[in-house]
Length: 103
Image (cartoon, rainbow, N blue to C red; front, top):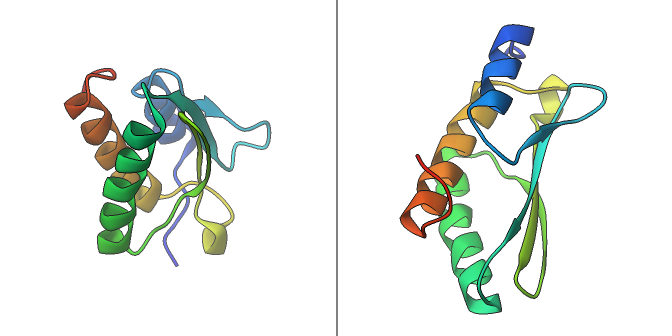
């Protein structure tokens, strides 16, 4: 089981991901994303599903039409770990390629 991030690393994760917020208990980060269409939202989710499988680390998420809600946490560590940072970076890259923010 990976170690949880120290508070300064958690702060860096949130600071480096505009639009993401830290949960009240500090054990997860989340974002609500809006895309131009259902197909764009689904395409993003499909890309991230493949990346998440490569990392063997999967987000909690839901989709309604053009909106995707994502929560990252490492359940077996009861908090945020380097696995969440790695997936957050892949999410940021996918969003940047679509013109949503920067990598």
